[in-house]
Length: 325
Image (tube, rainbow, N blue to C red):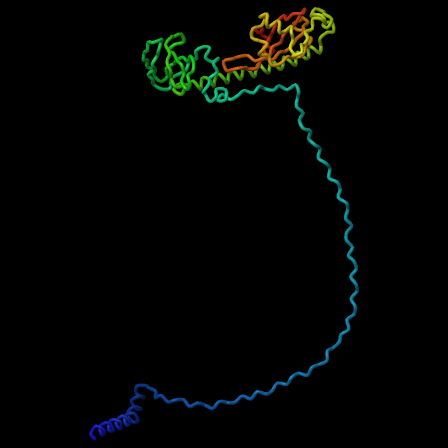
């Protein structure tokens, strides 16, 4: 019973404190006692029914017919005026009398990339310069001697063996040795000499061309008496071609040794017979193209046979006018 009395007493004390002690204390401490809000009754909103609008009869509107659009007048197209034609530039006509320079193979092609130097180049010893210090074994018969050649030393080249040059200490020395081509300035010396020959050959060809033009002009202006033997040989003295296109009179001159550089087997072409007055004398002339051997191989050359009184009086180079040996 006693515990129940204690619980009842505690409840009573708590109630009295909440009702009488808490309010003054809450006011002093500015506490607000929580009082639940009373719900206000909600006002009912009455929605009036919306009247449907009465359907009106569709109004018929009579549209006036639109006038048909008038066809647009397009501006009259004037025919285009023809554009003036540009004058055609005439293509340049090749001059039949123009000089055509000879074409020479490059030095690498001429020498097959330095593997085969033309043998004619070694007809006389050529001097080259050493590019490094070398000890060369010089041989004469069975005797062998070692010789030192310093960089910059001059040495003579006598021939070629593969990539090596056959050399000697002097042009007349019987001692021979081998040195690598690239150990000397041989290629530079050879190429420089080849360039010089090309210049000379081109100039000779140009002079020969000019000589042919002058020869044609002389033949055009040759007096009629030349054809009748007026000092230059009569009609019977005029050289004639055989079935092969060669001139028996000129072949006979070659075989007789009147010219040694021109041989029947190295003639490339025979020109036509012309009549000319040269240095006051009347001649029949024939130009002959042939190959001549040089230190750099074969080159085409031209010479002229001058015929008088039924025989070849002389052979001259058409380029220089000098007598052909």
